[in-house]
Length: 119
Image (cartoon, one colour):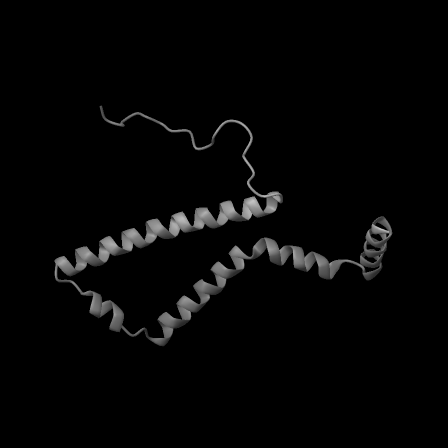
């Protein structure tokens, strides 16, 4: 029996289980695991490409390890790295920017309220 025509649901029914007391930690862990899965697939495909290239005589592992990028390629990679970093840290950056926009008196009021609640 083949898997043709079979469609799997992408989401489980019911509430999402939480493993940590802070749901944000669970969300972060889920994001990290999704990234790890994507990285694993990418590395497997890269490994396949390198093996096929070596088998076909296109280039070897040594060719890859000793290849030197020119300045334009290095600049392109740097820009791509910065874009990726900004995207990954976007949520944190937005929260930090929001802190910069807040009035210091608002912060002081919240601190005072927390201190009073603890007393």
